[in-house]
Image: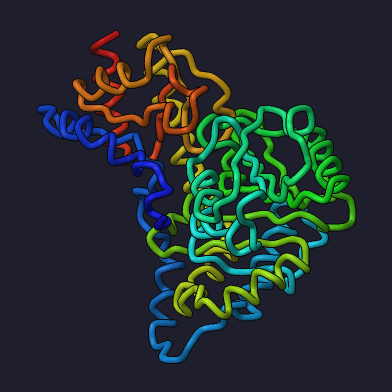
Length: 368
């Protein structure tokens, strides 16, 4: 059986009819369905990319020493990962690439098990399917999962789609259990900079979580959200030196290489804090406006203490909500995309320009 035959229908294809309805609205569509950046790429990043445009040779799969130090320094300075070592960093062609291929790159196959949250980014399951591994979901991995045959445990804090943040105590308990049973923990920390209203997301590599060792742990970080970097496809992982070395060896053979100009742009992005602070402030304003408007229109917001989304419900099937909002020209993502527990929820991204956010607020106010 081909790989594609094992995979479900790409979920976003199911949203196309609703998108057409939203686009037909007299005021145009407000697309709050996909968390894709819409603001300009910061000038410091564009300048670095342009300066590195004359790159005729093959880049290093391992990334330049300067890039790996920039990533390790970023983890040390901004996320308290005191043990971050540039030798244990690996650049990625965007974080989704790693999520989708990690089980295969680790050599997992039929009979091995991959676990991920019950409400989760769909690509965790896709990665297991590509590798022919079994996938299992959880609310509390320590209480629910049988470690027999479990080879990979995905964490996602802050969560996509719910915005839930795992506390230091929760992370520490999970890491201790996984280490006891020899389970590799992969922590997807792509939204770690986007905590709201006092939420403080913590890396699985923080010493308060894992002590003075990164054994059995890798953390995945993306520049897409903090730096409007999604079109560049740049991310990195860090953690257990043995796992990093193993992944590097496979990636060298298979040509999984971040282009040299993108590596240069990553260095600039990781080294500049001002643009990330400015971008977070933009998202905070949009989040506040949308939350007020959706709550005023009868929605209940759950979790959503971090990330780029509001996790919202009004107690009906998610597709009914999607359809009703599409008639108002507002497109959101059905919670069903993220697991059966999302059937009565929608995910609302605040990745729309200010003018479009204002349009959505006005339409919701009119309907309230």
